[in-house]
Amino acid sequence: MEKGSFSVEWLAQSSRSGAQPIAEARRSRSPTGDTGGQETPAELGVEGGALPGRLRTKFSAAQLQELERSFREQRYIGASEKRRLAAALNLSQSQIKTWFQNRRMKFKRQTQDAR
Image 1 (spheres, helix red, strand yellow):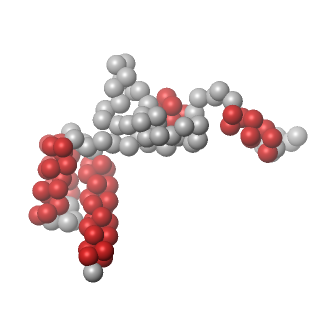
Image 2 (cartoon, one colour):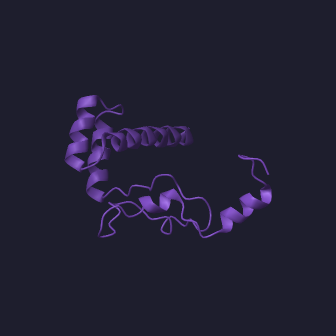
């Protein structure tokens, strides 16, 4: 077999081996095993298959309440409001941006379904 080419058998065998995927190491970054409000692959129901590249963030009720309040005021978030929310809710600006994108899509689906 030449370097760089893999057979289907080799790939199938390697996917069944006990090798730990890279995402496995990401699961517990703190010495206490705390995943910072993120679900582990087992909690997500991922068994045997590919693990997600990034664990899902679980927002607390207080965080969701503040995010929803901000969304009701304005559907598109500005840079200063994003920084303020990120600091106040102990989340990254990227998480705030993604939450707003997802919430706008949910809003769009809800308004389309109501017609």
